Image (tube, rainbow, N blue to C red):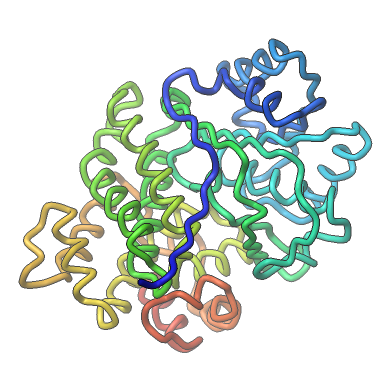
Length: 377
């Protein structure tokens, strides 16, 4: 039997689980907590529950919220400076992918030194990181369970993909009630990000039986619950199921890695600072069409998970994704986001070097990326 590896954090999932942040940090030996978040989350009423949980656990804390949608290297630098000055010894990330990715990046540099640029690639981290507790508040990024951190290089206008088992948080907390404060648009695009994680990890050349179980369950849950989750902020069942889908897709891609959709969206997001979920939503069906040739049997299975009869054509899976995207009002064209034909060449050059391309099921060139980019315009 082939040897398979699967990494994951301790998971705490369910209503009011956000109140267990302080207790979780204390269990890990924390004495002073550094909390990363963004201005949007900071303004929400339930964020106080995170702070109260730290107070109840007797833990002082520092809040760092100077974080943007596509977090940048200089934001990491500022965070590291404050973390060290305040003599913190544990990190909590609260929010979507941006605050969590920044939390991981700060943990790296605060304990290993240098610049976040030094850790681009796979397994560059040498020294142990401080305890990490990540709190996911969007059913989207999966960063709370993954071994990834994605940070934008401000000078080169590209995203640094950092992959290491050291980045798997000690504890991941997922409270579906936090999803009830998201807008329909954010629910839609982060939900399609979940679907992208699940599909790309399922067709990845590094997929295993362990990752397939997680990916397939996530695909099925998105098919059933993304539409009702977008339709109503108060649909508790839909929020719970999408939260679970996000966790499962995150576990799948953390271990099987991703593919061309993410390589391209990293290139586009790094250069144009566009929302990651929006770009993924547009690119997914085009990359699925490209990859179909490499693994049609996997696409048959995806179609069946969508409730389609996949016996005759796995391409029904692609049509399903297109219709789902239309139904929930997700962005449809890159040109609507300000991108042009002239941008294709640089996106092709940058995307082909992204670590996520390594596990794409079909061989792909920079010219292929340019063609897919133009199709998505």
